[in-house]
Length: 213
Image (cartoon, rainbow, N blue to C red):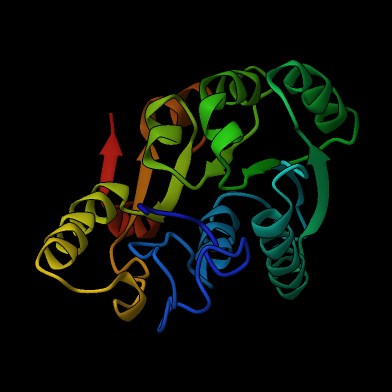
């Protein structure tokens, strides 16, 4: 497996350290991912900002874990969160109508296969409504989102070759610990910042792994 969000939660492995079956590989799960995304947002939005969090309730295990973490981090930073369901492409317009009606200051997009697939539509809506947004995949910022912070999925894919090599040489998947991400990247889209009439703090730009100009 490559970059599976929560392999233990969905029952693919018994534990990360000892998979115990015929499946192993890399996981994209990271306990502080949501916290780092909020930290990036707080450098841009006002204190006690209203943040609309787009999530997919159909992805029950991982999204629920992310939501629990977001609620805790949001409270610690004094932000007010509103979770907005997005289960399909057709729900994006309705979701952003809710976001606007509640006068949200920013948007966070959870890591999720569906939300990643429709990322360009989400970024378009966020920009049209003059809302700074942060996603979990580099592709989100490349599609026009203001920022993205998350694991380097290219690195996770390359690491999968390690498992293929070991298994072909006789190792049992049950004995090969699942690897969590070690490389993360912050990507900032200055084109989008300009469209939103935002000035990105220099301190945040210096932390960025890539700046899209």
